[in-house]
Each structure stands twice: as structure tokens, then as C-alpha cells.
Image 1: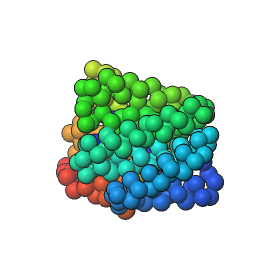
Image 2 (image 1 turned 30 degrees about the vertical axis):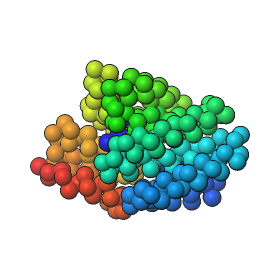
Image 3 (image 1 turned 90 degrees about the horizontal axis):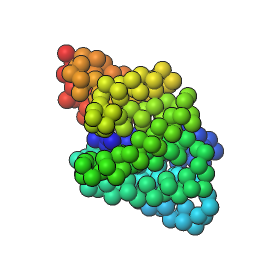
Image 4 (image 1 turned 180 degrees about the vertical axis):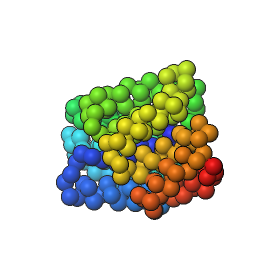
Length: 232
């Protein structure tokens, strides 16, 4: 599901150290620091392996792998994105095995499964597309007030073929919900712009991307998307 960047932040887990670590990962993603993200992901995986009963530890590793996969895809490396995402799926599965009542864990799992698909779309949709949709549907059902859950759900729909129930039109509805829940979500405006451009609504797409960049001026990928989106 993402040029398969992936969906993204964390509304749960508010311990100061955890929030600072998550913010750091977002900053690395914004600047497309791929090698550092991969290093952080491996380090978080190592920490999780030392405390295998800690669901949050596995989740943090999964989140880092998702960001690494996202940046690899932004740079056009589908194979590298797939490798990071596959590693992350294993981490997310472990978190859910320990605690299956956390919507954010399902959001990250669905995102990671979607990030695997672009490297081999036909096989990927059959194997991981269903798992991604189920996980993202569950995330929305478990936390219907989560902007991030609707954002991830929309990204999934954006990349899912229309004959599987996806497509940009359905994705836009999810992005609208995400923005309604969090009007300051730069990622929701980013994906809204990408989906609107896919629908040839260039003026609206450009406006959404400008809004996204205003909310998150450091996001390199937003700048890249804006540069190739006509104003009219």
C-alpha cells in the first residue's frame, strides 16, 4: 500500500522517553535519513529481543522498520523497502501476540504489510494485501477517533486496486476523516494531495500539499511531491 510510504506516528505510548524516541524517528524520516533509520530499527529490535515479553519494545522496533521502509520507497528502492517492511511485520506480530488490544499495533502491522506489496504487486496483494486490510480495518474499529488509523487506512486504499475495493476515491474519504480528527496532520494533507493528483484534481492537490508543507516544513518527500504537482 504505499509508494508505499507508510503511515505513521503514535497517539499512544506517552512516556517521555518513548515520545522523544518517536519524535526522533519522525525527524529522521522527514530528512530521509535511511541508513540511520535502519540502524535504529536494528537497535530497537535488539533491545526487544532482550525483553521478549515487552509488547511496546516490539512495537517500537516495528515502527522504526516502517519508517525505514517508507524512506526506501520514497527513494525508489522497492526491494529495500520490502526487506525493512518484512522485518517489521515480524516485530508487529510479536507485539500483537502479547497484547492484541492495542489499535496502534494493528495500524503499524497494516502499514508494514502494505509496504511489502510494491516490490511484487501480484503476489504481494494476495499474500499481504488481505492481511494489511484486516489489520487496518481493525485499527479503525478499535480506535475510531484515531486520525493516524484513518490515515493508514486511506493509504492502504490508495494502493489497493479498485477491483479489491481500493482506489484514490475511497482513500480520499479516509484522508478527510483523518483531517477532521486532526486538522494539523501534515501526513493526512500530504496523502490527500497525492490522491487528489491521481484524480487529476491538480489545483486541490497543490493546495493540500502546500498545507502539508506548512505544517511540517522539514518533510523532504512533501517537497518532492509538491514540485511535481501543477498548481492548476
